[in-house]
Length: 500
Image 1: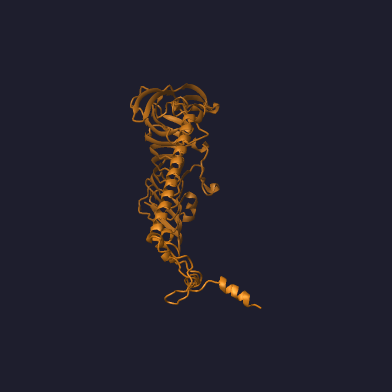
Image 2: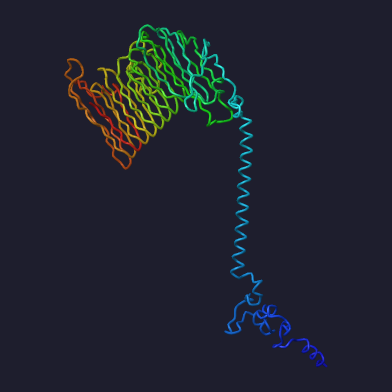
């Protein structure tokens, strides 16, 4: 019964040797027949190709084989020519897209920059809206006498130079000050004494250097007078804008202040400078007795010469402190990221000095301290501290404290020093030298110089030496404990105390 069906299947099933595709006839051209030669000619060849079995070797591969011979050569996507052409087209499309993106970015940046430039007023030189309003001199500074009227003088390259001058009257024991505030209040301050005795006033020369004329109209540099307690107050106030939007790296304004004190001036109650972005330098000021000297700045160094004062406070940041001082009550030197190098002479405190407010640091035990003493405090970070005491009156009590980090700390004392000492460091060396002098500094004295070391610790990463030094009169070392103190502490540096 199934024989007819089997015959039908046999008729529909191609023979193994039957051609898979029609073969070209004799009338067809050779160019038309050539592509057909690369095709599988029979069902057997086609099956072998799809099964992955090699016709010649008889080896098998897993999965169908995409042998290029089953495609016409002209349409084969895996030929070298086709692959190279595809890569070239891909590179061309990538570089075109990249160039288009860069071009759009440049165009957008130019448009936004031009808009911002026009809105800020750079095109017409008027930036007042962005700089902020012209600041007023606050009432607590005092009463404004006059303000600077700057006149354009010369062009220095891309900067404009303008100058103004003040003549400020001062009385003996007056309070003289320089105050500055604002983002553009910066520059240098030089202080000296006039060569002539004729002038009775303080001469202040103000030189302004700027590259935008809008800034010169937006600052106030004024002479101010008033009273502070029972003392006359006079000085200079410099107020510049503080923009809410900024900073303006292309805008520049700086000052050069030259302060000339009259030679006839013998005393000042207070000399104060508050200029956060100013460097300060003085000539020899030893002819003026300053009761209280207070100088403060940031991002600037302070260099002083022969200061004669009872109370001195110097502070800055990111700058060095250097100078020579003669003090009776207090000397405080402080900075960060800078070094301190000072020569210090002491003179006996007067009865009036005992009424002056004492600046920190106070002595460790004020109950055991004499009524009149001198305290010196010098501290910094990331810098060295070197103090050299050049003059120390006999029987004058001194409390000296020096500290630093990432730098050495060294103190040198003259023979008259008496009291306790302590040198301490972490990851550094600690040494105490001397005393070298055996001669009694007291006139007609025959005392004996002595030193005792109570503690000498040398541990891993830590070094500490403490003890006392004194002139022995036969009354015992314990009586000299409250005579004075010298402390030197640092980290990652050497701590050294030298007794001459």
